[in-house]
Length: 296
Ligand code: NAP
Image (cartoon, rainbow, N blue to C red; front, side, top):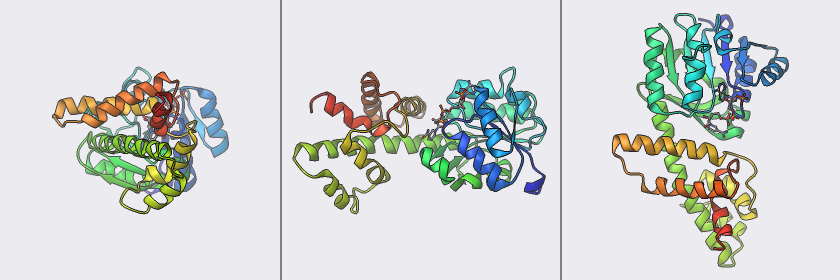
């Protein structure tokens, strides 16, 4: 089908979904109808993007060839898909549901199976790149599902991503996102320890970071977070509450597949301490705040 003959629906206009849907409408040039639980946000999006809005997931998907979602967790996802007013109740046969929520591999497999019994496609497609990646349309998208469904969705996902790949059957996108979060957790703790150590040692950590970021220790987190870690500023970015949700998913999956995650489990507990400091919405780089609080 030509892109200009397609219709799309978008469910969930949060920090991530709002700009992703905007890119889809602007660059894809296809009519996008949106649903958001807080309806004022959907009305605002529709006004800003010459789109339309609908009051329930069930109504927003009418006539849509592709339905995109980016909501909070497994329960939210079940509600907007198989709930009484969920999208699956009214999607037209052959339509594809693309889920950008970070959720469990289990819910992805469950919804994929449910979609297939209804003649629908389902691709789990969690993203990485944060709010800035969504705003700039340069997200990394990790997908699981059937090749045919993926091939149809990929050109649309390309409007807000710079890397998108099918990594295996249903659930594989969520499993890849777990690898992403596991790799980040230990890395941010290491960075927090290094910055705190350097400051304790009386070093100019700005200067030190400018040097070591060009060597083997360099990372996205170091490049993008060292300044705010040194300054003790965390009121932005990827929230600790979201990270704990994601690490919980990783730890649960590891109990299933037997892969040990000792550092991830420890860092998850450190994030629990950050939450106790009031850091629920702080950026994940706030691991360094524990040392300041502990007087270390
Ligand atoms: P957010 O700003 O809190 O937005 C969540 C969206 O989901 C809102 O539109 C919310 O509606 C909707 N929602 C939640 N529960 C719902 C329910 N039961 N029924 C209907 N709608 C519901 O979150 P976000 O930062 O965009 O994150 C969305 C997903 O992307 C999460 O899974 C997160 O882990 C993942 N993610 C986030 C980032 C990031 O940097 N923020 C990066 C990568 C991945 P309301 O407006 O009514 O609350």
